[in-house]
Length: 305
Image (tube, rainbow, N blue to C red; front, side):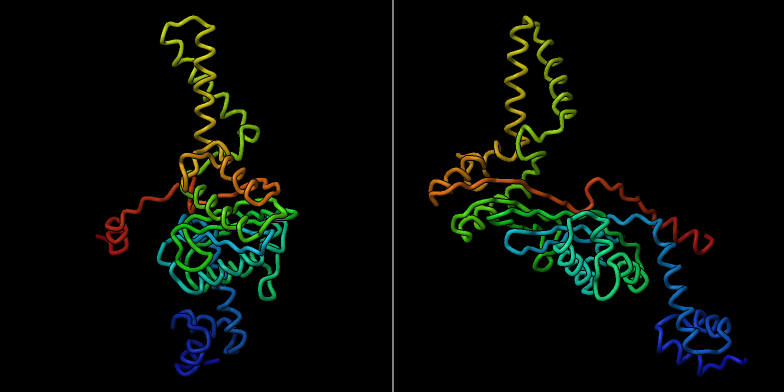
């Protein structure tokens, strides 16, 4: 069947694809317009798959909260430009809301329904539409039995969307507004200080052992006896714990108190127990090695110069 310019034009208007792609699609489908649209959709998905090799270290962190439960997700893109795309922002916000109904595992979130399809398919569709590699990198849900899970977004581009997302869980039967207000302050503190763990019990033993070895070597250089060295090491470890565990850190809102003391003060005010149960902190792109691009070389290669 002869493929006419009018057919190519109609398919371009239906699909938004390029002229040559539309002509090829019509040829492959024998001039059947709907089959050609399907062919282009398949081709679009194939292009999305090819993009998967490119580093996606930009994007957005999204949070969604519902009283005693909150979710945080990181959806990456290749460029910050896409992070400013309204469609991408809507996708991140919707994935965060969907995550609220899961156990927080990335497998559960990827499989969750978003507009009649799994989240993983929604992301693939966005890759084909927007034209960049994207990936749901990590997800988490935090909940309490009775209390508040507060959230905070740093570098917000929209409500619940930004560069750093933090969740903080506080269990208490007391005034939820006051508990939530302190929770938000602690979440802001976590965004600023990036603690390694809630308390010493939750610190990675390998991290503690590594620090201890460093402190031992430093102390031995002083030439002091072993019993003195041991005391020096324990003192430095206590200082280390104060720096990296949330409950022992000086509270950024009031550095005269630790975070632990701030929680105790609220408990005293409310006349009931307030317990800091956990936190989650996602910073966009942390740990991802970004590609260094030589645009001049790419242009030269493309033009044969």
